[in-house]
Image (cartoon, rainbow, N blue to C red):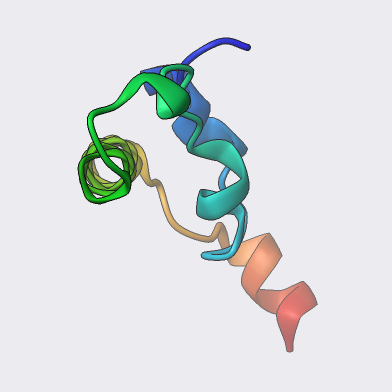
Length: 67
């Protein structure tokens, strides 16, 4: 299993996709479950930060199709 890559932010279409994308390859090797959850939150925040920086928004064509 590969760890979460920063480029994976491109795979986010909806908020629920974030849970599917964030993977910690060392999850069984962490000292305890709390530290594993904290690490996954870090991965999630990093992905959201890059998503926010690179988000271009809806194009006018997309907005017309949504209506």
